[in-house]
Length: 157
Image (cartoon, rainbow, N blue to C red; front, top):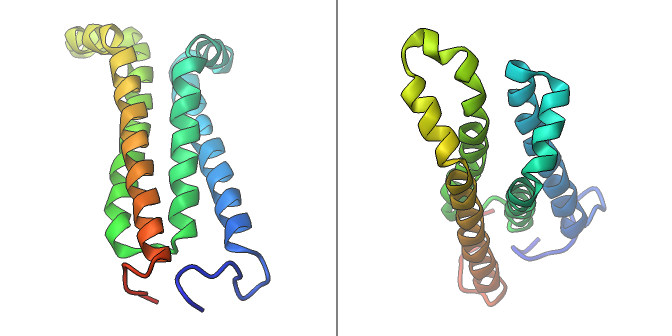
C-alpha cells in the first residue's frame, strides 16, 4: 500500500477514517472545554459560556478536528507528529486559559488573583492565538500531504 492509498485493510477508506477521527477529536475538545468549566462552575454555566464564546470556540474545535483528520489521512508521518502535538496542545491550552478565569473563586485563597485577572483580560487573545496556530498547522499539513502525493517524501511504512 502506498502512502496515498485510499483503502485500509478493513475496507474503510482513509478519507472516511480521517473524517471520523477528526469529528471525534472535535467532539472531544468540546467535551474538554465543557468539562473544565463544569468542574469549577457547573454544567449550566459551561453551556452558557460556550454559547457566549461560540465564535472563538468553534473555529478552534473545527481547526483541531481538521488537523487530526489530516494527520490520520497522511498516516502518522513522523515529521508532522510534533506539529499536531504543538498546535493541538495550543488549542487545548487556549481553552484551558479561557476557562481558568473561573478559578477566581478559588485562587484568591492561594494568593494569585493577579493571574486570574490577567487570564480574564486576555481570554480572546488566547483563543485567537489558538485559532491562528490551528491555521498554521493545517497549512503545514496540507503542504506535506501534497508533497507526499507528488512523491516528494519517502513512504515511512
